[in-house]
Amino acid sequence: MKLNELKELIEVLNRSSLDILKVENQDIKLYFQKHNATNVTIDVNEQITSTAESATAEPEPEKPAAKKEDGFHQIKSPMIGAFYSRSNPEAESFVQVGSVIEKNQTVCVLEAMKLFNEVVSDVAGEIVEILVEDGQIIEFGQPLFLVKVGG
Image 1: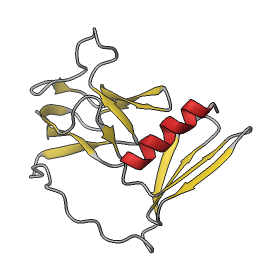
Image 2: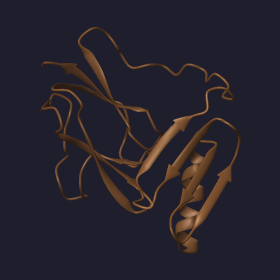
Image 3: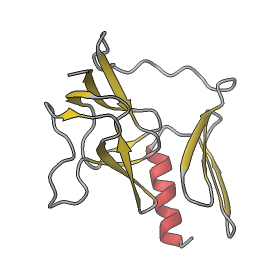
């Protein structure tokens, strides 16, 4: 891992609400801790998973929630990273408000450590709201889209 990559990783961590970051592969082991709430591990394949240590976590203040009524579903982020609605600046957005989507359809990409990871829908329906903006740093489990299921 190069110094500039390490600095970028620390900047992302400082801007997020994550408190612990643990990175391990064959060449490096990195452990960064701010507090005792969330633990993120990057394995040899640089896939990101997250687990909450709820026993030591303080309850978070409730954020203004998106509409969550019957028939609506939130597509949530599977990882931390920067949100992008398109594959590159010249491409069209994967989805827009009003887009009808299928299950397993790519809806956005998240960038983490210079790797772009596609996020796919876990339901079929219609996008009724995009809850984040391009370039925004996204946290694990953060709602990204509100979908009218079956629409």
